[in-house]
Length: 118
Image: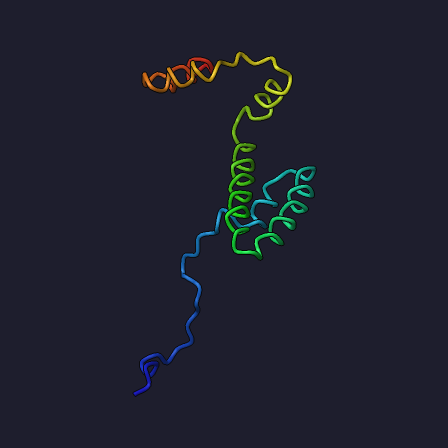
C-alpha cells in the first residue's frame, strides 16, 4: 500500500503561516543602517566559513544573536542619544555593584524609569 495514496493535491513543505527567523542574516542586514551593513556582512562571511566546522556553529549563532540585539536596539526611541552620551561619557552611569544591589532589592526597573523620565 502506498503511504501517499491519500494525498492527491500538491503540498508545500512550508508552513502556512511562516514566521521569519529573527536570526536570518538577510533580515538583520536589512534592518541595519547602510554604514553598518557592510561590516556586518563581512563579519558574517567569516563566521559562516568558520561554522563549517562543528564547533563553529555556536559562535555563528552567538554572532547572529548579538547583531539581532544590535538591530533591535537601534529601533528603540532614544537609542542614538543614549549611544552618543555613552560614547562621550556624559551619561549619569552607575557602578555594577549598585546595579546588582538595586536588582536584588527589586528596585532596578523603578530606578531606570525615574532616570528616563517615565
